[in-house]
Figure 1 (cartoon, rainbow, N blue to C red):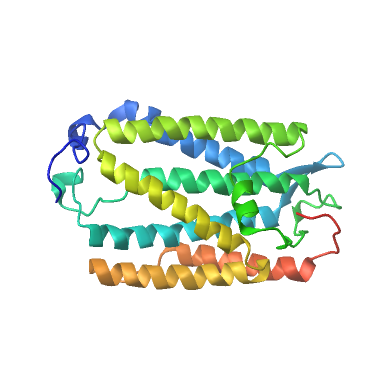
Figure 2 (figure 1 turned 60 degrees about the horizontal axis):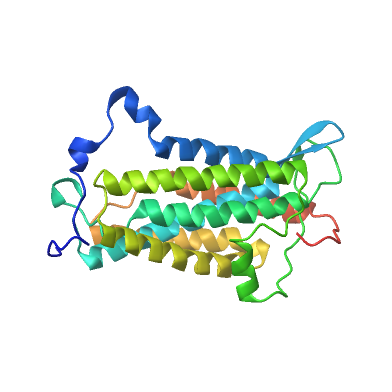
Length: 271
């Protein structure tokens, strides 16, 4: 445990400061979840010939991003054990050295920007479920790909994309409220917040490498990563290995990838 020096202090007692009852419904975290779901819907649904079309490739991209985040979350849990900082955890009983709130907010911002960029692709048919997609070309530099996870100024200002941009701004605002709430209500120290931000930046770099992987390998790569990270996490924390929903999500993603590749149509426009 670190010595108390301001950088390692909890601003409140989390067990006392936490919201209870009806007030818990108005936590900024809940609003962040709501706008996150809205962004998933906005980016995965198109309107073609008066009909709504669900872009299954965008759904699969979200599932891949979610699975990748869970693998990184287990890795952060392993790092927490090595850091050994239990400040601000309940009764100082659990490793708490990296703020998962801050890391998650940064990662999902980049993920939603990635999904927002896919609004430029329009399906050719008006079937309810569309598996059309364009393989992302990897001829651009690594740093250009990183830049595209933070910048949306180059996207055309169609109504759909403007709606997505507005949702992204609301997401950013609710994340700022959530992160402030996390710090002021004593869930993390400033040091843990700093490590969370640092790990979030690292996660963006790793995610950039991931999305530059050929699409057909992404779901399988995710499955291998989450099994390896979860097994290591269980070993470090002496947890029993359990069959979790992450594995079901991984199988669904693999099946969607396989079906998308089988259904792929020629597309000249870069995704």
